[in-house]
Length: 475
Image 1 (tube, rainbow, N blue to C red):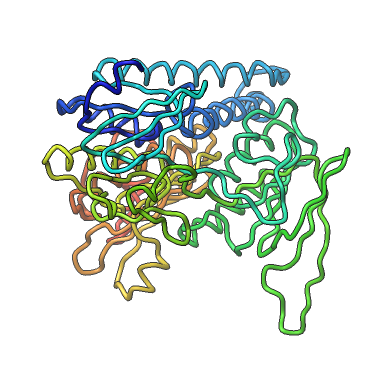
Image 2 (cartoon, helix red, strand yellow):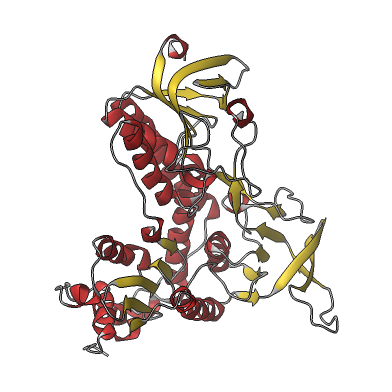
């Protein structure tokens, strides 16, 4: 951008993902002169380009495909579906393109200068941007916001290889359905993408180091969730460590051993063969080549940049999203974005990470916000529990989607809602009501005495809230 170097910005944001582009929008709304630096040719970061959005497109399409194969006949729709994977990928890519163009429009609407290229800090108040052709531009700014996000965490001993050992991005673009997909990691990414390819016809085996799925999930929900996925056809190898991988023409052979060996050394190493392996053990902050040393900022041992109300240790340098502490979620980055820009503009800004919901977009979905039962017990909190099964919810029954339940945890003395955990249809949509309730310090009785439309899945949340005080009416 030719004129970018000729002016001083109020804020330069490095990274055009959900954190970065929302920070840019808020800056424009508040009258700050802002520039957004992005190394990709399109805005939206991992989430829009190779994460949240394309994965949801494949989840939706694969759910419809499975319904057409297994459910339509039972409700009077006779069809014989045929998978057109190329068209499924095209529909996904078209949706992503429309979304990224939408972000470009929002930048123009809010008078944000978009500077394409690799951005690095070049000292206090300076951001150097190297364009694809090698040309460099230096932006002068009063504030720098680091919003560089994260990247897939590699697994030692298991090297990535196109089409055979892949990360989450590779799993979005497989040109054919694998016969046997092995997923390393039973977290959000592994379970979502594993469920996509299982619906499309792959045998799916999930190998997990821990003894339960969905790290951070309430234990009762995790047990029910894994049982549900197993009924759908996924195989789980829990408490298992992957120590190596060999690729060949036929696919990949993993070496496995128990995560915890017994005292007598039991638990022999074994092998597991598949034609594709998805490594989904988590994500790590992306700070490579960012120039942090030029302003005296050093990431911690895990690679995160520490912050105090989004301020780094360097004056005028701020950090948000996956690259700093807190849940590594797109919507958390969006909240950080609003808060940091409002602080820069002299307004109050704050994010309560206890109220950031988590969602796994499998079928059924899992969603939760607040404390788990395990956390409350560990903290010695006296709590009450209300639980309601979707099998007793009218809308869920009529739609043949009765798997799962809603659980509400409330303080035994004050009735304040401390946590809500949902495993069932549209859980990701339902959890918003729980977030709102908790944001206002609401009690379970507030939910229980609020009229909900009938018949809807949301009534399951109300009935679970009634259950906290023991007056569930529909089960």
